[in-house]
Length: 352
Image (spheres, rainbow, N blue to C red):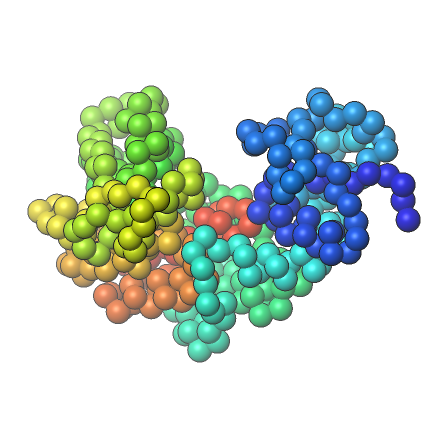
């Protein structure tokens, strides 16, 4: 048994389950190290910046981020750093809890084998099928060898196919615009004409930053019109409860005295006289409701779609099944752009 102290690098979603597993095994974690979180405490333990950690030589530092930081952390004075892969294999029990708690929205069923079999057949490329199989394996048996990692691609600009196939003049609807990151990515990576972008964002904190966003445009995008709607995408026009959590804020039609009320509406109503050719949705678990509110536009205009499928476990099959009911001609592709299963995106394009 070592006399060294234990610390975890990165106050992440995986850090929480790793911490719980180490506690279960009787291993004391003395503190967390994180260069970005503002909190001074995480799970009842102090959070230090690297420069504030003393006695680095008497410490085992476990990386709980999805980045390869071993060499850089060692260069900053930590002689014993465990990589994420080493940590996952050393403490596999953490993955069992991770599999149950990684969801933004409470999930009741992780696996539906019949729906997975259907979806596997509907996938248009082998990369999507392989990813779906990996996710299925992990959900059924959360072992280290089935753990999944981000593909490294820029979100909405995946490798292997053109998510904007067939579009020369982009008319883009951004549901869940956050602070404008997708808009800036479009200006950075989309080389064709962008006629307009409609950005929908109900979070007042994000909305303020979105409005003030100093976007850098290519010359070909100087005349692109940007319309900001302070509203959420849903399947009816009403006021919904809104839970403020920064990048993981969420909309619910259940009432609450403690949550902010925000306006929501159907895309079919808001854009009744327009014809978007690309709709992106990352609406923190309300994707099915937002799709239901856009079903007439989807059926009529068949825009390319990029829909988040990671906030709720059942969305992995419910989202494509709903889209298939609207337009069975869509080709489906699946990509994992984020860490810890985040930014799992279903791409829907019409065949050539």
